[in-house]
Structure formats: structure tokens, C-alpha cells
Image 1 (cartoon, one colour):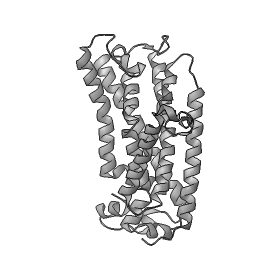
Image 2 (cartoon, helix red, strand yellow):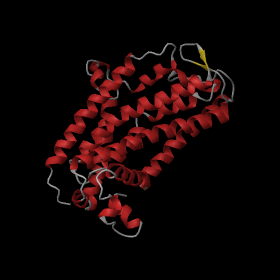
Image 3 (cartoon, rainbow, N blue to C red):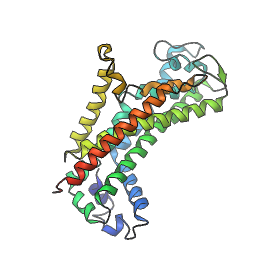
Length: 299
């Protein structure tokens, strides 16, 4: 559901003063609030959030059933998968790793790919530009809404993982991947940092989606193209013969949030991941601005 559909739901097209105030000082915040209502109100996005919330629960149940609740269960995969039965907090970390290749990027792609293309497809883009917002402000506000949605989706996975993990496996002190023990509260802090790091990485993917969204009037095409870029980078990152290319791929350092579960925390890969994400965000936002600023709006 785009901006036009949101207006229909509440009883018809909104007047310009209903969506944006006349005063320039109050405009940015109200405009952002309006965009957030639209993004979080779309049924597709709500369905994706529901799937993301269900994955940690299903993961916790599956491990509980397969391990029979015994300590030291687990299996292959990252170290925090093996640690789930000893502390339910690790369900959140495992769920973040499980949703990172596809589901979290899909949520961000759905929000960013629809940002401009959805308005153009519904014929509301020209209307938005008649309101004193300006193309740059419109683009940045929509991107801010995408970033917030990505943060909310990531936090939802972590929260569902914590709740389901504690319910099935309990809490207590956290044994880090390096073998040292820390408090449960410190473990929650490390989880919060992981959420922020992954949200920053996904924000860069959102910038790619915003750029693609300025190239078409078909939101589905923009969403598919954005998630296609994500999948392609994951494939390239798995090919050892292309190791020279890996540091330049956006997804190469996404799993570095596992370093936050070590003592001392290793920040090298995390720092590289943030720098690469910042570079992608700046380049593709600039490309989106250049394209959108010179685009002939016909719908």
C-alpha cells in the first residue's frame, strides 16, 4: 500500500495540509511521521515483520525439541548456535544470523524499493512535489523512514529471540565465544550493539533500494532488483576465487557482529563493515539524488 492507498483507507485523498504543515519548521518531523505511518502500515511490511518475529520462536522450539533441553547440545554453524541451550540469550544472536542473508534484507528492500516507485506507480509523486517539501527533503525523509524500519525489523528479531530463548532455556551469566563469562546485562548490551551494527549495514542496502526505486515506476521490480543485488553479493562473497573482491562487497562484514561476543571485543572487522556500509550509503544516496533531481515526474 503506497501513500495513495493510505489516503483511500482513511476515506479519500488527503489535502496537502493533512500530510504536511504549512510551516517549514514543523514540516520535517511531521513529514517523517507520515512516512513512518505509511511504511509500518503496509500489509506487506507487517507480514514481513510477522515472519521475522516468528523465526526466532521457531528456531528456539526446534533446538529445544532436538536437544531435549540438555546442556551442551547444538551442532554445526556459528558458535552461538551451540551455546543456545546454555543461555537463551543466544537465541537472539542465532536468529540474527539466520535472518541476515535473506529475510532482513527482504524487509529493507520492500521498504526502500517502494519508496519512490510506489508513489510514482500510484500517481501521487507529482502531488507530493507540489507541497513545499522539495525533492531532496522528500528523498531524505523517505530514506530516514527506511532506516528506521530496518532498525525496527532487526530489533524485533532480537527481542523475539530474547523472549523465546529465556522462556525455553533460561538466562543467567553469559559464556562468551572466547570462553570468558560476563553478566546477563552485559550480554544484553552486546546484543543491542549487534542490532545497531546490523541496522547500519542494512541502511546501506536501503540506499541501494532507494536508487533502484528512482529508476522505475514499478515497486515490485525495484524490490526484486534490490534483493537480487543482496543475493548476488552473498554468492560472490562465498566464492573463494574472488577473495580480492570480498572486502568491497557490502555483505562481507555483516557477520562480524559475532566479534561483539568475544573478550576483548575485536573491532577491526566491525570498523571495516561500518566504513564499507557508509561508502555504499553515500554513493547510492548521491546517485538516487542525482537521478531523482533530474527525473521528469509524469505521475
